[in-house]
Length: 276
Length: 328
Image (cartoon, rainbow over all chains, first blue to last red; front, side):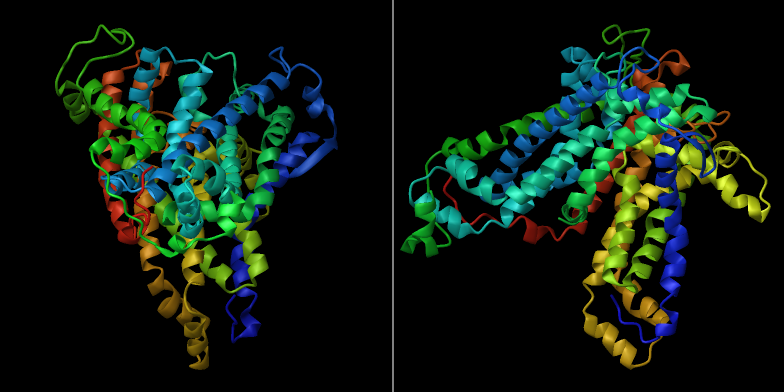
């Protein structure tokens, strides 16, 4: 970016960046190599094999195949995405476009919630889920996850609505459309690119979630892939990490796939999320 | 719809359409309809839990009393915390964990990456930033799997293989140097946030400043010290406040690796201790009341730091009133 006056020294940044970035690259290279080899000596694979991947058509040790886990994860992530985006985009429209007494306070409140570490509230949430009979259920874990993510999603969506030109909305309103109709038919289609990014982001955070199902649904019959990887990891001994690595690759590939395609948006969301 | 949009009327230029309506209900009805789902979830999972945490912390609720058979014990749990022999150790661990990760990785390493990236072509620095975001987007269980293997004993561990030529004795780094491992584990994830914020702050420095400095013959080191670092002040302060809070309350990665060990409370931090006390049956009798009292400390800190965080926003400009006041 900067035009260095001293071109002889242009290798210095690389000398710093390459060694510190290498461990992350090595980690992922290891994961992929381990999934297709009998065993690993450090980063060097021994005997390439496909046997780690037989879980795709054969039952895992526990007796079931991977597909119920995949289905559970997809259902979980999908429900989280739909609920989160629905709640956030409705709320975000109100705080972005409607004027009501207390709006500023509500916005400050959302920013505080966005920063507030909800993970400190798990004991009380445990009590609430038990009392409501939602402990150990998919519904309970979905609602908690949605609650964790809503302030963030609402804040991001507000940013998208803020950038919609007022003229469009005023024109529709002059023609007699209600705000409800404007939200559905005009504003939501305009923010579709941003909405897509928020959807993908919400799906991926649901897909990756471990702590909430682990704490609030430990005996659930609808365990997700994160729970599976964790239990495989605690069972496997080091010499036999091939299977865990293969399931890990299976689990992480959708994340990496979406990440490479939406990287620009995600960066925007990450930086927008904390910068406003 | 499209016909309306393509044929703007004179009124469309009126930026501030104001219609006064009578009564509170008509002013609140529409915003409320839009906000009800969000309000419900906020009331149920933020407001109520904060109050409940306070309430439960004043009881002796545990697995043996059940959720109903508890009795109120006032400040009993807080006194137990004050007199607990483990607390000094856990406090020390927590401070070391939070500020160690923060200084070395979340601010230190993030600064190094962001500044080094400023001196290389945009497409390369973009790639490096993308790699650094990988630990953050990777599901925690998979990331932990990779990190455990990185630190594993020979012949499996990658770190040992890399260090062998240097004559370092092979060992399982997660158990031999648990703090080093925990800091790196959290730091490789945490560094990306600072990196993004610092990078965008550097990009927003007017290029003319760099040009002027170069014409004046300033060295790159001087440019970093005199131009870049002073303008990163707010970004650094912001990252520090934000990450202090998130490190203070996050225990997922520690739980998945050392789980507070090896040995007795070696890497047990406050938030993990609260979780273990309240919800982990590993210690036998899970004490919800005592765990809640431990959590209250974090909740209060969380609220205080969130308010500080609020001050960091250019808040006035972000909450400007909408231009249309018709809530119909």
